[in-house]
Amino acid sequence: MEALRNMFRSWTSDARLDGKTVIITGANTGIGKDTATDLAKRGARIIMACRDMEKAEAALKEVRNASGNQDVVIRRLDLANSTSIREFAENINKDEKQVNILINNAGVMVCPYGKTADGFEMQIGVNHMGHFLLTYLLLDLIKRSTPARIVNVSSMAHKWGTINLEDINSEKNYDKQKAYSQSKLANVLFTRSLAKRLEGTGVTAYALHPGVVQTELWRHLNKPQQAVMWLAKPFTKSSVQGAQTTIYCSVAPELETESGKYYSDCAPAKCSHAAKDDEVAQRLWELSCKMLSITWE
Image (tube, rainbow, N blue to C red):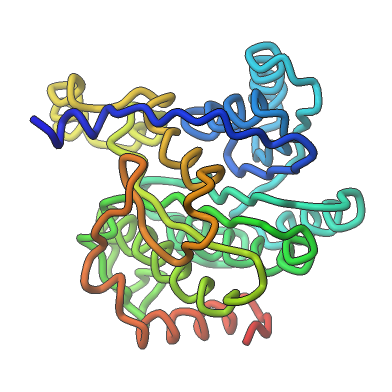
């Protein structure tokens, strides 16, 4: 019963973000939009990074109206295309004097096999590679904006994942669930590696499980899976409840000295054994750099 209570526990804090700038990927729907609304209410400048600009326009109005904060803007970002990521980052680096919080929230879930513009399997490409590149391109600006935070939205699905370094793009064998779990494990390993590299810089990193949330990510589930989710609906979270741990990792004062850890239900949580494997984390880092043609020691 306690676990169920914790699952729906709403974390509250009156922490303000006046004068701070926040970037949220995938902010036009679900958890991302509710995170944007909450942080806008705290006085932050919000940059909603979205692929679909039509949906983004509608979401922008909602966030401004719900928060009463007009300093909310939308910018186009397609995480399945490195050219789009580079253009987005170039504009941010040129136009913004600071980025205090980067929330890597966008994601695709158990979708049919597809490839990104750069030839990556869609789930590892968007969920991991896209955010890896985005973080790399914005890191100097984030380091100049300290204290700063990087928040990576993962999932408990990482616990069923393994990193297949020999076939990261699932070309030999594609199982959409396994590919999703692999991408979510990559999020936790990336956070761990990133935190080590950022020690002493004033930038901290966090990974989290938002909970099983009723979102558009369910759209690729097959009929039996959707039936199971429908039956489980009383035990799933709304997107507002699902956004709480992201908000917690973004603003909780007590996390300022923490970095590289994994959270769920607004509290530290256990990640899988595989998510603590520093050797695999390092090899994934090197492979990601190689595939993205970047040098990030």
